[in-house]
Amino acid sequence: MSNQEDIQRFEEQHHLPPFSDFKTLKKEGTRIITHAQGHVIFDNDGNAILDAMAGLWCVNVGYGREELVNAATEQMKKLPYYNSFFKTSNEPVARLSAKLASISPKHLNHVIYANSGSEANDTIIRLVRHYWNLKGHPEKRVIIGRDYGYHGSTIMAASMGGMKAMHEQSASEADFEHIRPPYGFLYQGNQSEAQFAESSARHLEEKIHEVGADKIAAFIAEPVQGAGGVIIPPKGYFDHIQNICAKFDILFIVDEVITGFGRTGNWFASQTMDLKPDLITLAKGLTSGYMPMSAVMVSDKIANYLIDEGGEFFHGFTYSGHPVSAAVALANIKLIEEEGLIRHVRDITAPYLAKEIKRLDSHPLVGETRSFGLLACVELVKHKSGPVLFDPIGEIGMRCRDHAINSGLMVRAVRDGMILSPPLSFKTEDIDITIEKLNQALDDTYTELKK
Ligand SMILES: *Cc1c(COP(=O)(O)O)cnc(C)c1O
Image 1: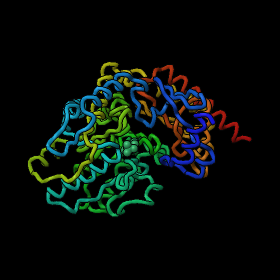
Image 2: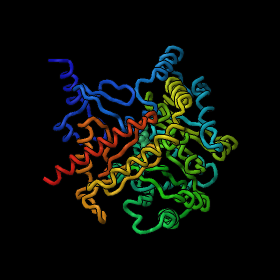
Image 3: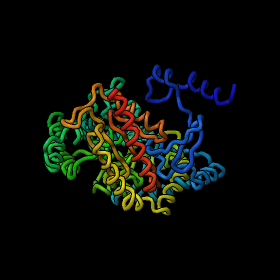
Image 4: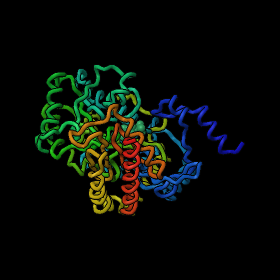
């Protein structure tokens, strides 16, 4: 038996991968990715696939970057591990903390590390409770999130998120509330953008009145909801949201796990959208996915209060502030700076993607296209007028995605939306190929449906 067949068998008989229906997976099989270079991933059947998802929203600088590999190798030789529990830390973490403080909004200057976006959000939940306890408001515990919000898959992060299917194994429901997101495709109707911004934000105010501001610790939002289907808020939405948070003394948490590190044409979407969060969640693009690492940026208001007040924050992980991950993060940030990737996104590829994706609008299967920075979604519909969605939701999207992958384009399906989140190093030619292949996948899906 060949080595490749062994690998396939080991995988399918012994691995239970994330977010999978194990029964379906057993029937359909798993694709083994063997290597990757630039923007292309390769599988063990010899297929080359253009990665328009940057892995899972994370490989911002593309694959095969020697600078990151060398940073990891050198750090592993020098100091592969040491903890930050014993009044100890390490050089890469100290440097990275200062760097993150310098590129994030001015009022955020302290960092707490973890290893995944989920862990960073769990850290935030514990931190805001610690904060309100010290402030003499232990009853301020509830965190309000949004439907279709994604904040990770630990039990607390999943409960804070708004993915209904994940709530079956939820933490205490009393601790989390959810409001309707500013999802224009479903909810805008004939409201103007300004009206829709106002009416969407009003859901927060209504929820606050329902729960009681004295019980609410924080509101959390992704600037653009990623895993929820690239839901882009109308202009002005977050101005209303921030005013409401300030009015009721509720902390404002911005989950930038996807939008951070250049994807919206600035280091952070908080800068693109002029947000003033109390806390920011970072992960994914922090290391371009080369090593697991996440971070919580803490505002001066909170950090200084915790420092002045004292009292141990009983929280941390064995691998918090891992020196190898920090070294890779520093190399990643340096590369983004030296190659001008953020300017490249802002001035060239984001406007280009915004223009080119509109070419799909006329396709009979397309109900809406939208993009923000290097994030985009193509919503498939049964009928354009209405629009009328497919029933059940999700099957046609999955079929279209499979057509795309079979033609050499990696995209993701969320419900019946086709999602793009390419590496920041994508060139306009890569966008051309992406749109062309996506158009072909739409045609293939349409032809199949007519049969
Ligand atoms: C992916 C993601 C997370 C969770 O990160 P993990 O590293 O998978 O735990 C949290 N928030 C957002 C916005 C994400 O996209």
